[in-house]
Length: 91
Image 1 (cartoon, one colour):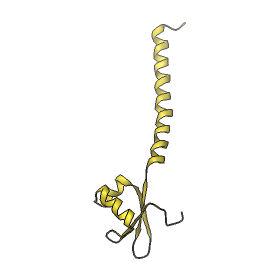
Image 2: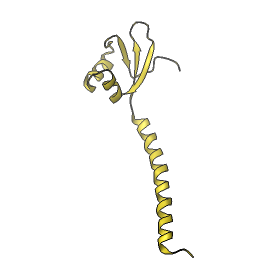
Image 3: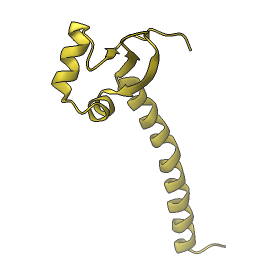
Image 4: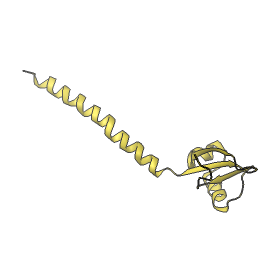
């Protein structure tokens, strides 16, 4: 028969394994659903350059989030790049 400490230790291990799997997976899925993507294209030939979250895009192109939002709303090129919330390419 197992002592009380061994049973408690097993429960702690089982609980920690469950906590590490289920909530983290659900958290990642929720973050993915909530993340707004910015698609970046060359202005000249609309070649796809990549997609970024809003935060990553503002850091990658050295602009504030307000500036990024301005270019997304106005649909004007920024330094030779088209920024869009809508995917313009097929992949």
